[in-house]
Amino acid sequence: MLVVALGLLTGCTLFKSSKSSASYSASSAADDPDAAQNNLIRNGDTLNIQISGVPIDDQATFTLKVDDNGNISMPYIGNVRASGITSAELKSGIETLYKTNRVYTNPNVTIVPWQERYVSISGEVKNPQQITYYRGITALAALAQAGGFTDYANRSKCKLLRGSKVIEFSAKEIQNDPRKDLSLLPNDRILIERAIFDFN
Image (cartoon, rainbow, N blue to C red; front, side):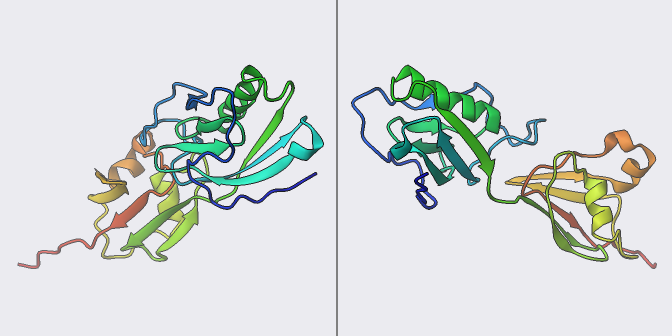
């Protein structure tokens, strides 16, 4: 199999084709950072994409980065929407494009996320750190992995930083009612500030 490392490509077209290669979305799923589905592909993710079931000269493995517009660029079909959908939906979309454009009759696409995602915890915790994101991780679970709070932590006014958003939550309330716990997304940051003590 010919293995082609294309580097961390953005949305530019790799090859020209006489067939239609309009930008394609494999799903109408919104690219919403607050989406409940935490396994969606996101802008900036790096993917390993393998194509088989095609002529041997075209069999290849590509390393592609999802560009700022949410696209990757595939041989012969151009831009393909990747952000906001799952790996399975992207696989189906690429295979469909190859078939409908009559590039390949029975392509098999395999997609593996290459880049680990992280959640960071900083401030008044015993072990500030960056931990590997996994589906289903919550704010309280991440704080536990960071060793819990220091004696000076403001547990009633914690901050979850998600892109440009700041979400305040109370760890005390979550401990009393776990249903209030927050599900985390890749690249979330939790900041625990120092409590202000009034000694007067």
